[in-house]
Length: 177
Image 1 (cartoon, rainbow, N blue to C red):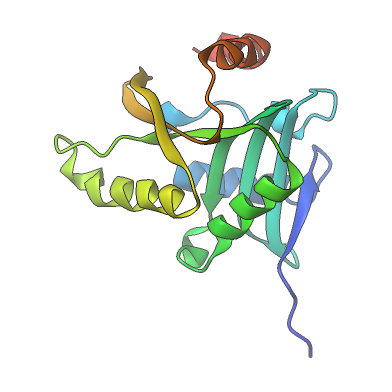
Image 2 (image 1 turned 180 degrees about the vertical axis):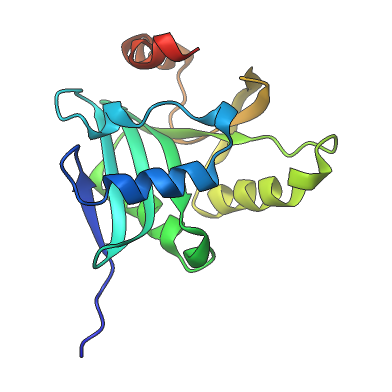
């Protein structure tokens, strides 16, 4: 029997992958870092997309994006625990770079803090992962829901364009903060 090749597929509310994506999401993100995934699955929400890397019916990882050309933002990137360290995250990020060509691709990554030693190694590993993929630190660290984040980007950082970007997308989750 031929082994299945992992495939990247767009996800909407009717996708067979939605529930498994939610399970990976719940395992990979602490409660205080979660917002609803529903806008990413809703085709009527322009600029919000979800993609899954799956082998058959098994979710290996997923990425959610917000896009307001020429800017794209990786909101969530997660790999199923059993598939971490096997290139799933890199494949998804490289897919985003190709499928969403933009002047700016950015994300927020938790700041590795000495005051949180139980999470220090995981955060350093994540930061280095994004650096290997070409992301660079930009802007100042900021706090969201009690966590400190560093903005990382590929491309031309522009504070004014970022402000307009968030003006467009912040209302999607305004009732959750």
